[in-house]
Image (cartoon, rainbow, N blue to C red; front, side, top):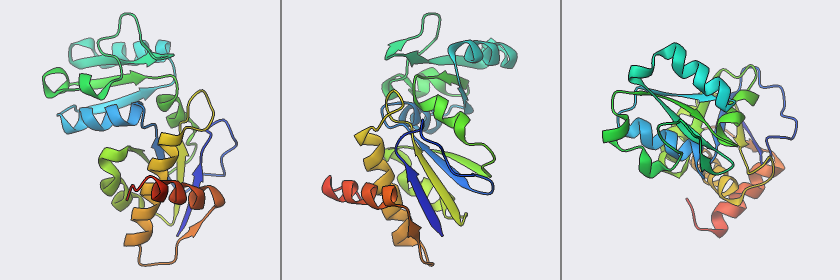
Length: 192
């Protein structure tokens, strides 16, 4: 099994054909996605832009669809929710489809090319993502970062994920340098 971590989504990614890709945007897209699903949302559809989110929500039917997200840290005018996990309570999202557009996180989902599986990861669902990712021999972790550059919270989460996979794997796990660095960061912050 091979795990590659990429700290900056703007950097070129390897060929993702046949890989499982894990997208991490701890603050806040993937944390909000997980919170929404835990609280009964039917699904979360990432959008690459505000305009695409509006089009997608319209095509899904606005009665059961919630537009959510942010642009440069601010709730988007005309959207139903921002992107704080606190907004994704069962009262707000149960039984609804969510279309989300964010500055960093949702855009990272559109970098995954020919990945077989794409998973959203935050500290809240590390174990579940580790189990699902281990179905693949090739795992690529994409940290959404902030403004296309390194974000410590995403890197620490990536390291915690790599640790969990390594602990559970029954095969040798090859790591790229960024994955090794992410593990060290997670250990430094005592996240396991």
